[in-house]
Image (tube, rainbow, N blue to C red; front, side):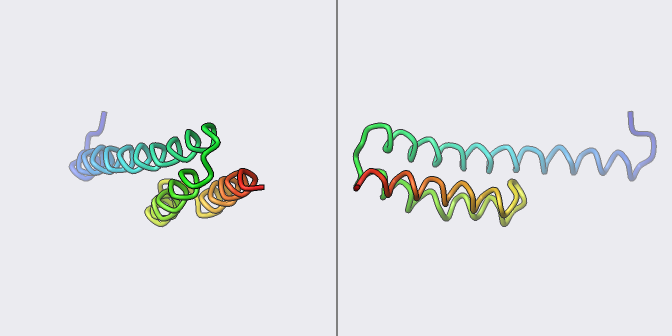
Length: 88
């Protein structure tokens, strides 16, 4: 348990930050799931639309530090490749 005043404050800040990060991570995963479901259904138009909505959300999560920048780029790239294969 934290003893000093500053350590107690740091604990409170960490708790608030954790809640914000959980919400952002959850939001990002929701968008990812929508793209995955559209790909699974085989609907190329829906998958492309879902990817277009998910991409800024994934990059925003990276910008806010929820996921690493390279991780976000990799996710977007792999999803885009999978959506591209639907049209082929």
